[in-house]
Amino acid sequence: MTVQTHRLPNGFRIVTEHMDGLKSASIGIWVQAGGRHETLAQNGIAHFLEHMAFKGTAKRSALQIAEAIEDVGGYINAYTSREMTAYYARVLENDVPLALDVIGDIVLNPVFDEAEIEVERGVILQEIGQTLDTPDDIVFDWLQEQAYPDQPIGRTILGPSERVSSFTRDDLSGFVGQHYAPGQMILAAAGAVDHDALVAAAEAMFGHLPAQPASVIEPAAFQGGERREVKDLEQVHFALALEGPNYRDPMIYTAQIFATAFGGGMSSRLFQEVREKRGLCYTIFAQAGAYADTGLTTIYAGTSADQIGELAHITMDELKRAACDMSPEEVARARAQMKAGMLMGLESPSARCERLARMISIWDRVPDLNEAVERIDAVTTGDVKDYAANLATSAGSALALYGPVSAAPHLDDLKARLAA
Image 1 (spheres, rainbow, N blue to C red):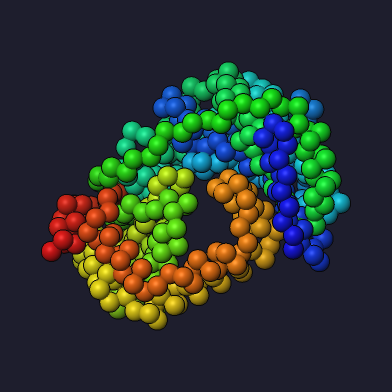
Image 2 (spheres, rainbow, N blue to C red):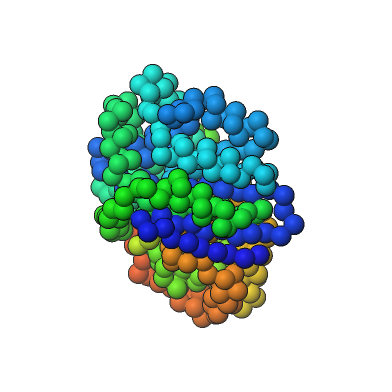
């Protein structure tokens, strides 16, 4: 497997990884423009734009876009995150040029037909409604908002219905013109791919675009807080966030190992103590997520109204205890889980392609996998204990609760329990 990179004079980047023995490839364009690149008035427009990319170009209708890929047995999709929008496809080896032509077309030449805008507006409003009806989805949006109030990074990716209802063709075109610059685009491909052929194709397709300065994002400032939404549900949905490192901070490996040991699997502390021993929930987990300039260690659980107090208090007690008695065996198991998950997850061209784009966006290079393994192996039990102690004593915190929450402890109560 060979990773190769190239940068066009206008800043457009190409990264590929040839995977021997494969007859298929994953290819896509990742644009460094997501939810946190929006103004308040634009909230939700990056996601709206992602939807509209498939609704027709100067040379293909929406149906022709779908047929072009599916006629050769391929798959095409897209997603929007807070820092990125991606358009990607999976096809057989001989159809890689076709996939690039289609993806490049929808990124460069969307027509934003007024009738299609109205149709897709209805689709997105239904998507927002579905999210509002899914408690374990919406509670994370509220948690993000509490962690970063009144900031682009804290706003929902889908946007509020009232803003989505008002976006115009000019709004969509304006966001593209502002953020879809060649220096903010990455063409990534993995599997049965030819690097030189893709560079030549990318140069023909994107080389004419004028270079422009990169978009400046508003720095994230974790503030924390609490949101409690009362609703007659079967469960209380509990989501707690503690401020963590950003993805360029070497501490991110410690944060991820801690989250894995604390609540990342069936052998983790939270799963064993809260679910297996006490039967307080069906779902409970911890995870460490990161952005360019901030990060969150998040704990989630769903439980009954009369057990939420016990669950929350045990979670705090376990967090406090982890700073004192996290064992070398737990840390070794978490390291093994991380390494295995990373390496097994990269056995598909789609996962490889995603990693290539993400690494280029973060580091402007693709670190060797051995580098990541070495960083994981370098994390000690003492490092994990120190990280847990910092979470328990110094980290900013945010709490979101949804459901029959009257008996749920408040954030100040949970913080006081940690400090006791």
